[in-house]
Image 1 (cartoon, rainbow, N blue to C red):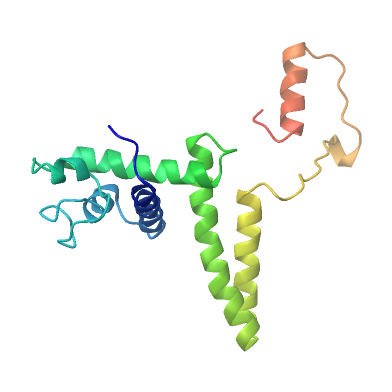
Image 2: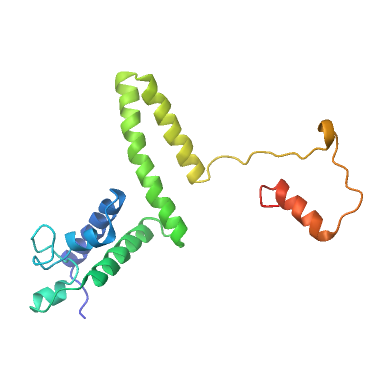
Length: 178
């Protein structure tokens, strides 16, 4: 396969951006695949999407990709676009975190605009809640200090413990599972 031209690369970048926008809007994978398909026979808008899924098949007059292939293409596009936006993140959980962060940014913008423009106190509270959620999601908050104490707030007495019991106690103190 020949290397894509500059115009084709731009169209592919736009397709990936469109795929991300649709996913952010909560659209399912198959619908994204159909909306971004090159063949108007399967494109949900009835248009030939430039550099859409299955463009090589469409140009050669062959059968369009099936639903499973459209889903794979859409997933790959969203994943690739997220990797390009955030190359330091390489796990699917981190990709999902990015999607949620982008959604929270949109919600914050709406609440912030209303809070600033109208001085709407509930909108201010909503904007703060969105910021708090985003800070937790992106792990921006400092860890909360936890202290273990014995009865009545006194010192915790450990007379004898195995290494495994001490490891469990340390894990519990660090916020892990006991």
